Image (cartoon, rainbow, N blue to C red; front, side, top):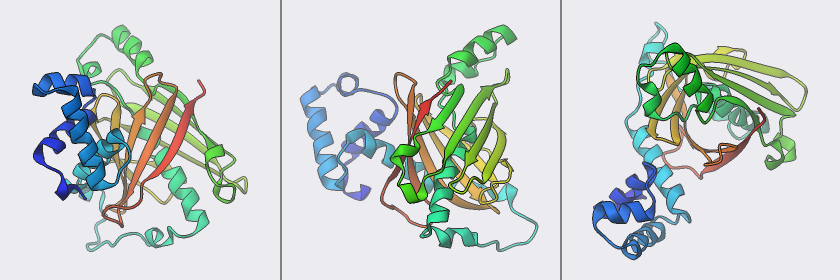
Amino acid sequence: MFTALTDKELEILHLLTAGHTVKSIAVRLGRSEASINERLRDARRKTGVGSSRELARLLDAQKIWDTKIDLSQQRSAANGVEQPASAGLLRTNGTKLMLIALPIAAGLMVIAASSTYQVARTAPAQASSARSLPLVGRWSLDVERISVEERPRQVTVAFQVSPDQKWTTKVEIVGPDGAILSADSIAALDGVPVPVTGNMDFIDTVSLRHPAPNTLVMTLGKNGAPVSTRVYTVARNRQSMTETIVLANSSLPKLETTYFKRIG
């Protein structure tokens, strides 16, 4: 899909992912805005993706996936662990609900925080910075956008940040049958796998990358094998967030998107 793109088209898409606008890209590259827009139109035509920013996010997600973020530190003592059997159940409605839960379970660590907040500060300054970060607070999955047969009753997620810039997230999912799943985790934005605790047994690790100010790339794992890569984008008003999903058992699947809204 991306092999048809020229070096200049790839450069423009990477700048979009980094948070640039068409105007700032034109200034940076010494080109007109019309020229940049023409390059983006060509890229959309070649790939069949209707949105330039969606194409840029997909390109960045594929780049992160291709680095094959190492989850081997979490592998069990036994060698040759295969992809968990749950990956073969993706066709069932029950497992689709799990896929909806996955971003939240490990959204557990979904944080789109600006790198400027990682500079050492005093404790009061850190507390003030934490309150201003995009994802601090409570979020709810917009279940109305999910088909009735796969829809959970309720999903809530709470994010907190510590003075050392590690994120604690607590999640509760109430399934269609009333069963409750919960999970907790603590992670930094350094790509290092960390454990996920609770009763969501379809994942056990998560690692995070922060390629752009408003974007977070997450890789979920189970028994040392990757399950999926997910790209999260927070809206400018900080009241909504979208998630784009790339499953581990397909090199370039049809994009799936879920939506969250702030409730606290």
